Length: 228
Image (cartoon, rainbow, N blue to C red; front, side, top):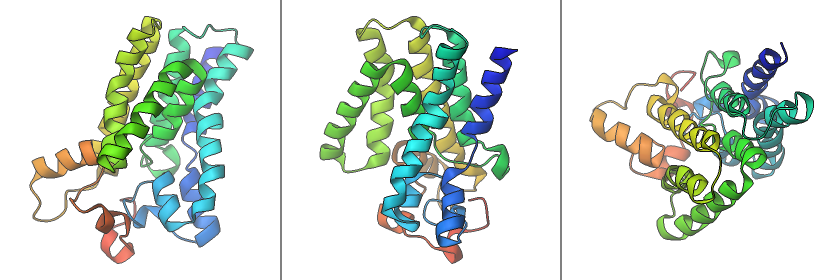
């Protein structure tokens, strides 16, 4: 029963659309109609306000990501190498990405995944962050940096001698975030754009088009129907 409740917490708290709520409360906008259409931190940064990244990030990291892990460990007595905890972390990421409150649209799950790694494997997270910082200096593209940093997390888990369950967790996170990028809230490719090009941009750059500035600055009349 305890494990079932843990997974329910992981999904339904993970699914709380914090960025969407902030957009409605602060700016009275549907954030899904702005910029990337993503229900996450980058869209809040550009279209709600930079300062709101702090409470948003805190909730995503600690309540959504780390919360299920801490409850499972300190309340249910599960070990940090438990596959149940890994599963709860992945369910939290999935809840954020495909929120029942927003007709199974959502964000990309990166902040939630960071919260999960913070609670379960902080040395892996430290290397993820270091690679990301170096990558940003080289690529100046958050989409590319996050993707490359994520791909390396199973390597760091293996190098650091982490349990197999942690390696499985990192692979699961890569799979969920990659799938979300490709599906992009079930939106069709831009008119006239080759499907292969759009999928490549989504997976690597986390956007549909080449020019990032045009992507993040889109407004409702350009962003398409609600839910994008």
